[in-house]
Amino acid sequence: AQSVAQPEDQVNVAEGNPLTVKCTYSVSGNPYLFWYVQYPNRGLQFLLKYITGDNLVKGSYGFEAEFNKSQTSFHLKKPSALVSDSALYFCAVRDQAGGSYIPTFGRGTSLIVHP
Amino acid sequence: DAGVIQSPRHEVTEMGQEVTLRCKPISGHDYLFWYRQTMMRGLELLIYFNNNVPIDDSGMPEDRFSAKMPNASFSTLKIQPSEPRDSAVYFCASSLNSGYNQPQHFGDGTRLSIL
Image 1 (cartoon, rainbow over the protein chains, first blue to last red):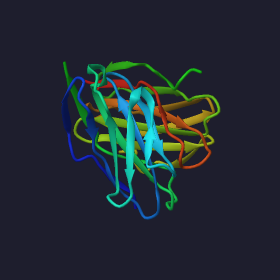
Image 2 (cartoon, each protein chain N blue to C red):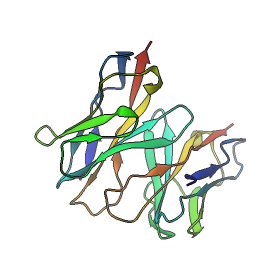
Image 3 (spheres, one colour):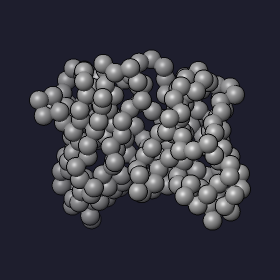
């Protein structure tokens, strides 16, 4: 079975400060991990993914995510937040050992960047 | 390349009416997904297709919901009869059939309001 948790419903950060949006996962085998962003009245947009290899993954709009196998985490980060980063962020996981093609999505974290 | 295209973007109708939502996936994508998003339940997978064949419809809430994919470039989600509790944003997504590490590409959704 696969599952993902986003422990924070909302994250508040000041513009220019670093941001972190947390995600933890549970899988039977090894994970494929994804981050998506959803702006108001839009669909989810793919940001980045972890398949294997380097634990630090770089993605769109200056975002990166750090894979930590021992802590089963895949936190999304950005060194300097912009007001335009304010959106809903979703983490998703697929179990490489699983038979289902379907990813499991977290409930989402609302990121609010204050000017 | 054009992304996933959904129509209509907004639909307001009265309880008991038939509602048809439409989706055009990205050309060449083999998987198509229908999701529903609400504040209470988050993002829910309703059904998905592989090469136009329905694979898993266990997320379809009731017999009032049906989905078809007559060809690789078109899918519909139908609700008949509609009820107020069906009010939600419905998303269509597509992805490539080249492994579990492929992200999903979402349309901008149909915001459905049943009065």
